[in-house]
Image (cartoon, rainbow, N blue to C red; front, top):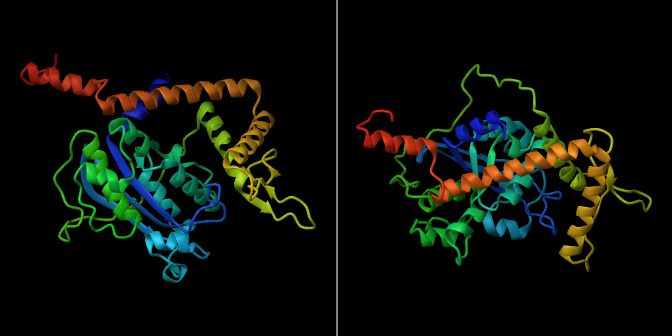
Length: 337
């Protein structure tokens, strides 16, 4: 595996961010559709300490909130009007999560919304490129098999006080997720998120700091192009007037424009997913050479192995080299082996 990628993965284990979003709703097929993010909440963890740095941003979604969603989080468009648009706070959010191990409960849902919002804001980069995304639902299924792994039940299992969670909120859920994650993976620092005297500060990019421009490696560029296909499939660019089929696509270049697939009322979810998958494969064949697909598959395989290695370390199946060295130092009276 690429040595530089290994170093990167080791580095991001030092800083974790628990993230949650609230939205105006979701499409019938589970994708964002025309729905928008209304709140982003993030909590920072460094070396298993919750640092007090957190981010909470409410966003004007520029559209109504579905009644079903409002019943979950209690927010309506009227309450959110006058808040910044997502594109106005996109840089602040991406700065906070960049380079972190990003903990998300049911990551596919939140990252699909974030990725769509990045695109709308003119950021042609995905959440998985900004940070190493870890789906804590998948992790919880391995750590507490046989139990429901929704956040409320995990709080109950690990005796975490969730009494203030009468409604869902992105920051509150991110705070609870941080506690649950630490409890699941071997203990946490003693703290209360609801201590009004807590000296928590909102993270900001240091004054004068700039982000370096880095040349993207070929394999990561290919992953980026492949992920753009999924976004293009659900991004409507024309309504299909005069009886024509609506068109999906993007302005990323030729080859992304396709008919917008819409789930039929009587169509089963499995059948609709099959149509989406077949369309994606057609786009892959059009947008990638056979050689590029070989490079892409190799990268995805390596990334899957790296993710499995990370999970094994969390589960204690494999010891981190730094932990081994630390144990050896203790045995040798603080001296290196």
